[in-house]
Image (cartoon, each protein chain N blue to C red):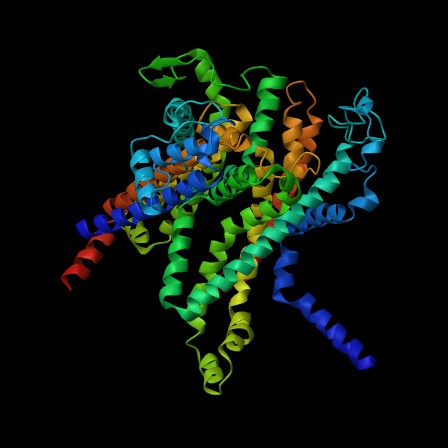
Length: 311
Length: 328
């Protein structure tokens, strides 16, 4: 009991004293970004608990309350702190729920891209030959187009091709797939590069000599040694993925107004901008910008902290 | 040199064919093209005859070859939504997009390069620090949000500039330009700034990083040791050598500008190809979508090709290495 506690505190003090934590504590910008990210992500995760209203509960909505300004303005109502949108939904609550959807799509897309990219990268780097040529040619072609355009094309085509009935149900998955398919290349290239270096090292040779199954070598021995940089790329790509989702939703090919993400909220608000109802789009916009900025800053810090050249 | 050009050309053709294949698949296998052309009461025999006449029973390769042949001549069929030739619609929309993209590209490089040089040469001045902080925000703010904010401030609150459309345009042959009228010029300001901001911050950061890198090099120290003025060192030696990557990235960014034009055009209801594509998606107007795909693919292939060739011209090391390799 005592020894396990000591081991625990040893682990804890080692983590606190590590150079990673040291560079973390030394950078006030990173600390601020962490606080902002934790607040936004935390409130999104706890949306059902802390949101003052339920934006999905159609019975509670009243068009009489539509486009109310924020509480501190003239005509404002304190039960709707940041005002209401065109359907009478509380802007603050839709932001909580919208951030949740944005994060869900962003994280799932990055995870899927990572899965796809790492698998193809391992395949290309390990097997070489025709698989390598084919995968890397596709990657080259894809890299010559901006990711956001590819996501837009995939999503747009899927949007107009799928029948209307299924569309509303699978929009979320189509969106995730479209974003993932436009970002896998970065993962694949990185993994392929380090795989080609690692596969000639002695520990791999040794594993081969003693007859370990190739699949086990790749997953058990090779993968842990090539995954490091991939995780850093994943953090940086998370911000881009959230941004891509917001852009697609803003363009009207992402999530529908009934299930609004931050991008959809800004799109809805944009229609009311000219009549002076700025709060419908500006508040979700601020949250989106803060979220992307803080995730970007954390990604930058992580990249520098793991870069031995900068130590 | 010739081998290099031929290799790059072949690669470009291959990419173009891939894009065309995707567009063709979209065009031909999504829904039945015959159903889109005939009415409800057309008999099965008539449909078959039409199918035969249009060559839709021909083998895949033949149909694809015909598609490529037609596409090369700008013939993409009729738009489902507007019942007009797609080529004609694109020709109408193209000037708007090109003017906007060009305006944004000029704005981005005209401001981004000097800002990058300044922040690179005066790394620790507070002006540089301020510019860098602002540029970080510029990178993080989504394009559509910047557009929305600009509309809110300059169109709604101040009422200085129009918030949508192209203003009055002048026809010069088939080309329409908004750059010759006051309203047209006023209309392009906000969209061009929106589109340029991201590229500008990118160019600025790139130029800055390159200048800092180059200033560390031995030949710069040597130039200083020879007693050259800092002006001659900074602009004669340092700047010249930073230009290679800057040209490459700026060139490649021209492609991104066209991609991001989709967003800017939607925000400002700018009647260009991007808005046309988004509207085509909403109406499932497949011929327009296929044509846009081919057009954008074509733009990108051309841009990549030109950048590669420029790179070759600008960087003598590439030429020497290749020639040495060829001789050896």
